[in-house]
Length: 188
Image (cartoon, rainbow, N blue to C red; front, top):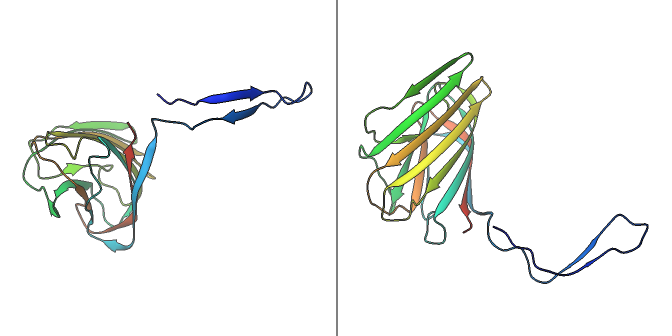
């Protein structure tokens, strides 16, 4: 909950519809802090960010705008001390709609978490919310994405190791991609 502390609210004149606020202090609590922006305008096969998950925040939001060069999905892996967590400890449930059809998948444990709309080239817009990546506990995330092709996907991922992570790698499962990734910390 945000709080705005005011010391004086005035109505400047009988004919004016505007209020004047004199504030003492500011808005506290809630919101997002931008931690980093990673732009990759040259086609790359992966983007890694170290040191973005710290004890300053419990929850994070990652916003990705990317253009895939090949048909396929995109994935992420958590990182600790500069290395990807690539063992089969990611469990996911994905739901997607494409045109007039819908599908679901819940595969066995995998070596990465998925985040993009299934199987399309071109522009994709994705948001991933992550709970507690920097805690020594299992990590949960939920992502939602949309492409220019009429596809929408929602994926929940559960990483079952009790490990604290300080970074993330994103990558297309086929070929290369370009785009921008912004990482935000949720204020407590």
